Length: 132
Image (cartoon, rainbow, N blue to C red):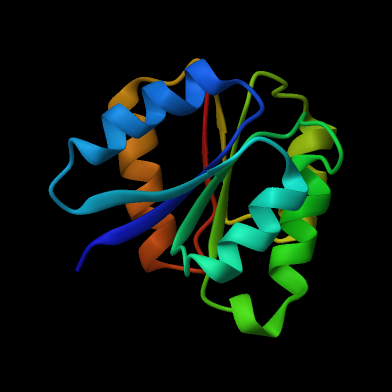
């Protein structure tokens, strides 16, 4: 089974880097990229992503609100959100998890940790992943 990944980050360079990393995996494929939370919520539905790697701070709709939109949409019940951000503040972690995120990573993680967390959240809705 291939894990379908949607990348949501307002920085094109980071999205491109994540795309290269993820597409190099035999069991993962980037199906779409969004530069803001509104696009992420729309693309999660149209592209049938399994996992959304979501930045918190983005224009228009931030990652927490986009996570909430995805988690509340019955048509997106199987989509997992992995929040990836430079802002590792406890209140943001709690807010993201309450919005429906399945995991939370700081952008300082090793590439293997991002891949492992994406795989983990794709398999288990109830498991919360957090790494720094």
